[in-house]
Image (tube, rainbow, N blue to C red; front, side, top):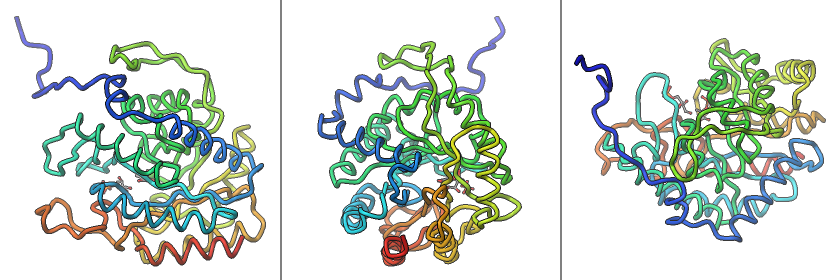
Length: 346
Ligand SMILES: O=C[C@H](O)[C@H](O)COP(=O)(O)O
Ligand SMILES: C=C(OP(=O)(O)O)C(=O)O
């Protein structure tokens, strides 16, 4: 018989079930309480009943959990100082969507060597999320693979669907069943239509193929996620963080009858992936909010202990501690300055 299956599959390694991993890396009742409470605060910010500014800040990706935890400990102290004005949520990104190919994040390749030990990656991700929550910080992540949420979503306060997947039905369906507030990025081309349609679709009930806690393939039915919003991240035609761009987004969202709260990303195409431009982009976002645009509910900043980024792959022993191996980030001192300016301005 002709071989017609798995012609291009070289390996198929079973994973532990989500239930097994959740039993191995347990969420305590205090952590569950913290996650529920932080999600509620973010919902209130999106609805405008909590007037604090939502700031999603942290490394582009977590590749070294030691440096990630050191960053979190500093950020937790800073968050406490500005908590009356700014609600800080740490970027804890484990899945990286690549333009072509490259390291796909800690879940896919925790050893950073192409060995792709996903069981170890999921275990490290859960363990790290628990450590972050214990510093007192809520967690933010991009959800990329539609099976991943079953393993980690109970430890996430806010999530994003990235520019490369906002148009994907699979991701909209997944978002419709997620329990936390979620932002859809505008497309890499820069248009807002896909994100507006995504907010609409994710708000509706959906049935799709998924995986149950037992690891069985299953048909999942959702009630829709009412807490989705847009993230303006710029695009191929340039940035979209200006006051006119934000006003245009609010108009489009209102016309479509979906949540008109806007988050603006000071990173990615809004700064041309140039960390030295990120502060001026961020300051313009804060200026608009301070000038009275309360629909501009939050911002995103890519930040790490050390600024910029470093070439990857390279020998692991040569990596600079605390510096991004994906997109360029602002350094810690710049982060402190920008966060303090935000609290002073609002
Ligand atoms: O935020 C991360 C990156 O911009 C995104 O994952 C794409 O990265 P790449 O263009 O380097 O693949
Ligand atoms: C990949 C990211 O962003 P975008 O989808 O906007 O490129 C990110 O925030 O890490």
